[in-house]
Amino acid sequence: MRLLHRIMSLALLATPLLLRAQSPPACPVIAIDSAGMMRDVFRLADDSMRGRRVGTPEGTQARDFIATRFDALGLDRVPPGRVQPFTTTRRGGAAITGFNVVGTVTGTRFPDQYMVISAHFDHIGAVGPGAQCRASGADSICNGADDNASGTAGLLAMAALFIRAKPQHTLVFVAFDAEESGDVGSSAWVASAPIPLHQVLIDVNMDMVGRNVKNQLFAAGPTKYPQLRPLAEATIGCAKITVTIGHDGPGAPGGNDDWTNQSDQAAFHAAGIPFVYFGEEDHPDYHRATDHADRLMPAFYAAAVRAVGDFIRRFDQAPVPRR
Ligand SMILES: [Zn+2]
Image (tube, rainbow, N blue to C red; front, side, top):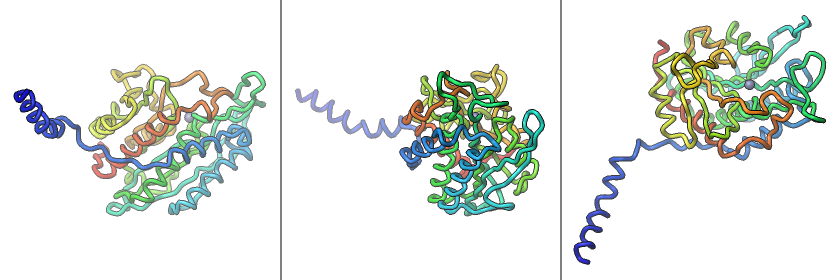
């Protein structure tokens, strides 16, 4: 009994030391309003938004929702302003105008070095002439809750986070339009960027971050930009879901399906700017009328956006060279 007591006492004494030796470095708290983020998804993916197709009144409504939020958060503007128009052509030839929504938080130490944080807010609209949307039974609106109301609401959450805890580098939050037309909004923005592209250190893009049955999120990019890998791995170590570097080149998990050119990070990559694209693999509701807000997985979603915030903060505090 005494001996046992003695062993237990020693064990108790040793426990904190052992824990200290074995624990990974402390993980930062990424404070986001996850319930508010879900509300934003429901709003953006509501039937009244009719799938937020570029060039439609509902696309404009979504644009204004984001612009109003950027204003309310107090994000700064860069020329030509909060809403940055571009022109594109629909299949069939008619010219349409799209709008990217842009807001910045000026860096406290490196104001003229930029990190672009992005997500597209457009989707494929409703069933109609020339539309990609296919009906599911009587449901004729492709709501795009996961694709990409999830990333858009995540972008708003990131803006709210970094307006409270100021970054060292200037963060440029961009909600891109016309991604579903072939990354048109992001290509137009990069082609006539309102900030010097050679001072853009990275694009962190979110597209489909709201649900995954395997609780798995991919971080694409570090296989092409290996200097990003240590930061991504630190984020992976702190994430509450599985985050996997992949879908970004030969040899990487999912490497046969390279996502580099499948969302808005493509325009940045083409300009030689490193990127990390956070997104999950396709699900049965992808690009269907059934991509509904109530099919998101709120706990997964919150953990995914926190991981994105963790990565942004790590990069902000320890940026790595572009090459
Ligand atoms: Zn998308």
